[in-house]
Length: 606
Ligand SMILES: [Zn+2]
Image (cartoon, rainbow, N blue to C red; front, top):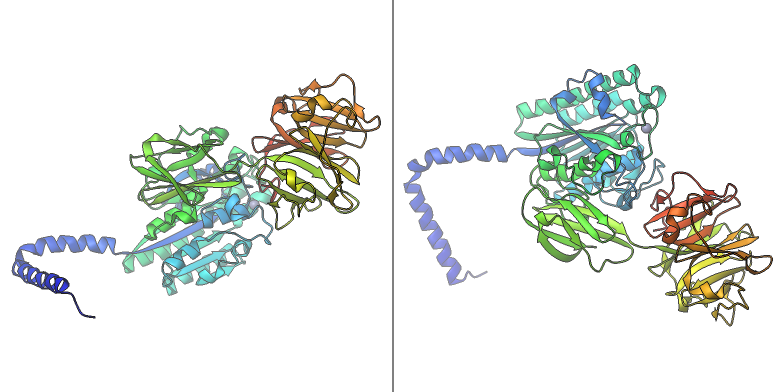
């Protein structure tokens, strides 16, 4: 290619300047030496060792001799997602390790429990590293082999992997890897502490297991130390756990403070996100546990140390624990208000489902989305090259229809994003491929009124009724799967004696063991309808309170849908992403409800 005269001039000037500098070489010598020292420091090869000790309760570390953990700076953290939101996940190993290695919660990685048929739906740290630089070497040694099952689409990005066997074997493999190869990122999982917890609970056996884990950690850390002493390498060491334990120490899996409590230890000083507990967050559940380090912080920390730029499209949940601090503790304050904590002033860019939304000063600390979208909505905040994300699902269940039990064991849920979900009651999860659009091919005769559906219930194993918010209704034939001809028609006192005056207020309806039906109204009252007499019973509507509906009383005006399930139970869905399980035999809500609608409680529904 011919060089332009301009470029030729630039080259000439550069050469002249270079010659000029050569003449002052002596003067620059001290400066150069200083520069070289700095350069050597920063040019050290960055490497990461991530050690996971399964089921290690942070409060018990001090009960055991742990000279190696003691070399690290250890901070309290939390697992299990934000309880009551789409990110909530069981405090179990499957979701926990998947979160540790992907930097996101259940709503994104999709591993709800320990069943190894589950597979992470997102990229892991191994893929982030290899996509950045395929020459970087990754290694993963997991005593609990399902970790690699959940990441089976990721195994191609791991240069050396080993799973199963004993912790001692895992240590041997890790030391071999550190001694005879050159891993840039090594993940090691040690399992014994969790096993001892399950068999013996907290106590001396558990404490001894912690000491043995510490010894194993020490052996691996020594191998890293050897490298630091002989090679020009800068190692970040992170030690963590997947979940805490219930108070006895035996089990785990639920949402309690001790089960959600984890720890993150590092051999580095860490930044404000690592060192400062934030007590001003809007969600102070579990004694303010969310002000601590999140389990999702580990992967951005690994990437930051390795100088791998974090892409906002990855929608990583948390900011790094070292280096620059992004938006901290990002969470929804309510359905359309984002909250974050900022340690410094700067410009935060806010992205909604990867589309740029706005940018605001970080110190503002919140943002109101005046036009939030339905369905899964992800917000990613970009500040100082770090990202933080939160997902909210504003979709409401607006009607539930228990389908013909003689044909299959399904229920249908209609949502206000004009989609519906077919739910398998036997497997207790949505059928794959759902949600899909509600329209005239999926629901012949109903599709034209998809925007008006307010309630549905099964009248018999043959017919279902849909109520529309304009006071009309549709009879649907469940045998032929088509609306009966002539519908919709207006609800009158002839076709539904006693219901006409309330037809536009119906928000939910349910068949009660084929003798009664209940209609729930938008003003917190309800009607009882006799299926036998085919009319509203006298004395209705009545208020929904804790004597008419024990356990449901405080939520009467929040009901958006109800669905009959079996002879004993039915479900109520509320407008704040929660639901209530109701025992028809005892005629009261099951204790502990409302609970969030998420991928643990209703897999695939929202
Ligand atoms: Zn366990």
